Length: 176
Image (tube, rainbow, N blue to C red; front, side, top):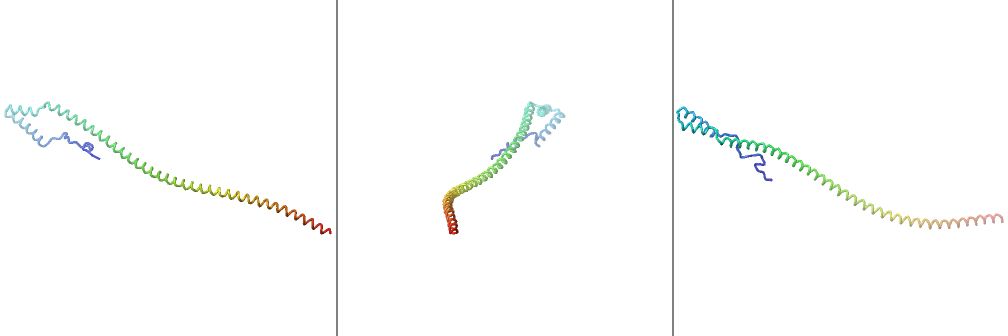
């Protein structure tokens, strides 16, 4: 990420500072003006007056000072907006990280549940196969039971007939 001085709030513009050299020059002009007035030197006094008197540069300097004040206000506003943007960006990055973690966790949960579904489907297939096998065994057992029941009924009828025959033979033998 490239950072410039402007994005950091630094300017190369000097505002309101007076150099030591400028202060010395201003003091020298005052002294020259006083000396010229005291010595009645007109040219030196006129020059000192001209240099120290307000000039058309005063308007330009005032305009520049106003521009500097406007720029300082804009800088403060821009800095505030920049800080708000950085705060929002940090929050968005944090939210994105949290959401990413949640997505990862949910993806893991989905994979686990899909595995469980696969296992349960396999178990269902096994259970259906067992049910089918049990139904076949039940049908076979029912057929066997029916045939055994039929044989039992035949044997039971034979046993009753034999019993009746024996009872009747006993009666005949008792009567004989």
